[in-house]
Structures are given as C-alpha cells and as structure tokens.
Length: 320
Ligand code: A3D
Image (tube, rainbow, N blue to C red):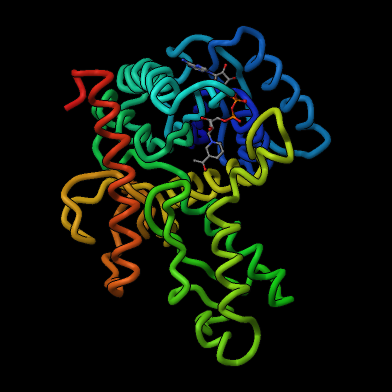
C-alpha cells in the first residue's frame, strides 16, 4: 500500500516543523507548498537529508504548484501573514482571507478528499472561510487551537502540582484567543477534578485563576519572548496529533475548531469544541452541559467569533 500523502500549505516556521515531525513519525510522504520560491524546496531537502541519520522512510518535496498536492490525504494550512505593528485586525483579516481563497480553491481542485486542518489566524474565522472557499464537507475541515491551548494549560498545571504532564488532562472550549474558555471543572490530575484539588490543598483558587489567565495569554507570551514571530513547535505538534488521529482512525477525543450545528446551542458555526477525530474526519461533537457561568463565558467567545465572521462577510460579499 502506498504511503499516505501529507500536503503542508505554507512552509514557514510551523510548516517546516510540521514537515519535520511528519517525516520523523513516518506519517507519510510530505509535500511542502509555499509561494516563497526556494523556501519549501530548501526545507524539504534539508529534512530529507536528515533521513539517513534518523532512519525514516518518507519522501519530501517542496513546490510552488498546487498540482503537486494532488490526492493528498491530509492538508495542513499555515499560509498567511502574521499581524505586524500598525496593522489593524481588519487589515490582517483582509490579507489572510485572500490567502484562504487561493488555498481553498487549490485544495478543492487538487485534493478534494483530504482532511484539512487550518492553523492560520484568526483561526475560527479562517477555518470557516477555508471551508467556504474549498466547498469540502464540514466534517473534513477543522482548525487547530484547542489541542495547543489545552497543552499549554496542562503544562502550567503540571508545573504547579509537580506531577507528570501525562497525568494532567485539560479541557478548553470556545474561540482561540482572549475569549477561550478553559473548563476547570473538567480538567483533572489522574481523574481528580481541579476544584477537588483546591479542596485538597494542592493549589488555591487565586493560583488557578492565574494559570487560566496565563493559558489565555499563551500565544502572546511566546510572541513577547521571540519578538520576531509566534509559537511554532507546540502548534505544529498539536496539528500533527490531529492528523495522526485521522490517518490512523484513532477516534481521539480532541478539542478543535469544528463546525457545530445543533450541539451546544449553536446553529452552524466554527468554534472550539470537544470532538472525536477518526477516519471520517470530525466524527462527533461532544455536546457537554455547561454551568451558567461557563455558558456565559462560552457565549462571549462565540460572540467574538461571530464578530470576525461578520467582518469577513463585509470584506468579501461572496461569503454569506
Ligand atoms: P510564517 O513563518 O510567516 O509562515 C507563513 C508562510 O505562509 C510563509 O512562508 C509565507 O510565504 C506563506 N504564504 C503566504 N501567503 C501564501 C499563499 N497565498 N500561499 C501559500 N503560502 C503562503 O508563519 P508561521 O508558520 O509562524 O504561522 C503560520 C500561521 O499560523 C499564522 O497565521 C499564525 O498566526 C498562525 N498560528 C496559529 C496558532 C494557533 O494556535 C491557531 C498558533 C501559532 C501560529
């Protein structure tokens, strides 16, 4: 049987890391696509040359031609520009919306059967636009944010408790960014919920609140340190976890930006929710019941995403 084909649209910081991880894990052959001539070719060759040392079997190719992604099983999209000083949110939306149009049409024409994972920001709006432009089924297009946000939350919690990150599970809902909703009630250490750990004296409400805030600000913290770009190792590894769940039909329960129509009181929109990812793509949305406070936070997050969608529709009237 031929190896799966993984197309990475965007060969920047995250794209290059995705290629490296996909090859090291032997998830399949990798095609790196980018409009910047030389970048995808150079990264593909560099990673391929690490193959004999690492001992992986994966072919890597860099390209500027969408025909090279033909028949891809998975497409991970990081194409776009980051927000620069002086650029408004709408400026960024306008630029990345145009990028999503060209990428969506490229996927539609060359890899319509792929499972598509969007990472480009602003995430919840871009994944929606990418689905609209590509016309792929909703369950085959989703966005990566929740796995990363939960990983950050888990990391901070494991430091606070002095336990292995493997034994900390976390639950984050809502849009990616300031309005994300880390659900403390459903986050645990080996099954013990965080509120119980407060009662057991493992931490305090104040410390937990500070960890939740640090999780919400996780992206900005890295930007502040790097100064010239945003996080790429943890975002790449998070998207690879989602791709692997699809390629190996693992039925993983992962939070991702998925199309929700009916569950959680939503009427057809992309937002961060717990999902089951397997060979069918996003196979299930887990319709959890929230408390009044959680619902209020989630509603605020949904409203923020809706604001971005309205702005997209204002920029491109073909999106309605
Ligand atoms: P960067 O290193 O700038 O890579 C982006 C690449 O996209 C560059 O190589 C560009 O040449 C390329 N590109 C631009 N336009 C096109 C186009 N039309 N077609 C194909 N390629 C194009 O950025 P990065 O890899 O650090 O980040 C990529 C995206 O991920 C950005 O939008 C970030 O904001 C976003 N991001 C999201 C998260 C989430 O958790 C959702 C986390 C970190 C970064």
